[in-house]
Image 1: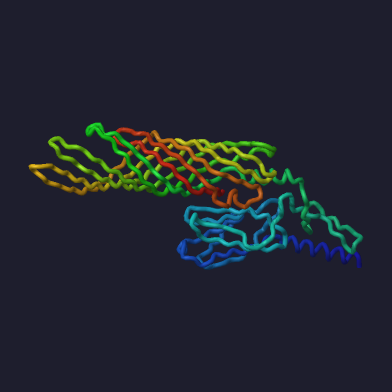
Image 2: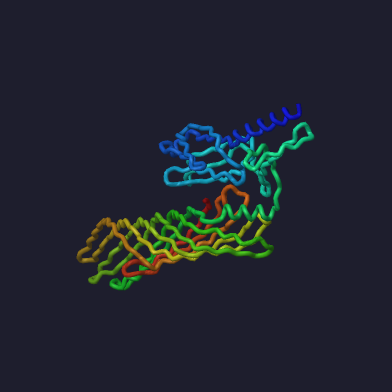
Length: 374
């Protein structure tokens, strides 16, 4: 009877291994935003398509020795999630589109905690007395959750979540520009504002855990685009006693490359959480597209006593290799986050474009939010 029990136990364990895998359900709510686009779910080189308002359930083979990488991709953007799966647990994810692009978030399912790993067991107790040993080439018959050294677990999390990351930002920008007009012996000053968008990439190199101040640094590259509207006036005396009043409205689109270096300064709140500030010094060569609307009024005194008003619209482009800037932003990285910094952080940016040829000096100050992703 005991031998029969052992055989049945071994068969049951092998059947358990044959069913080894993670059950995952993906839900894409019906939304207007991005409704025409298809979301591709990529797991272990397998691809699943989700249309707007659809859902799908899959069983993914997994050996539980490391996190399961899940990626959602659409429209040139991609989000990833490293699932620390537990055997027999079922998971539900939601995906779709929001303001900053595609998203992927876990709705249901319990994950391993930091410091926990899955250990496959190769023995099983039959009837409380006999241990059945499976040979080297046999199949594992069960799983156990084991605790490992917490500091080593956190180090592994940092390694998994470090590397190349993307930093995006949306800023409100105030601008000033000034220029001397030598031909008219006068100066113009203009003010305005608008919106600035930027995307940059860097390598996250969180330092080893220690008390007190710590720092990290990385090469930073990317691009930015602004949409700025500013206005200025110009009053010029004309020989013969006349005068010209000029009002100029300029819609400007500076497109810049960002090349620089980021320095992080802060401290560890605990072994798994680093908080501080990131300071980026960047070189910004830029191409600026302008749409200029000008209203000029010329007045002549007696004996003419005439007034003439002209309206003019023009487009032009200029290239400037001399731009440079500084970004200052708050950063908060966690080894246990599914995203490096899921909540937007405050960002301050300062940019100077020196005068080149007929282009004016341009200064912008921006304040907004930034966020990090893989």
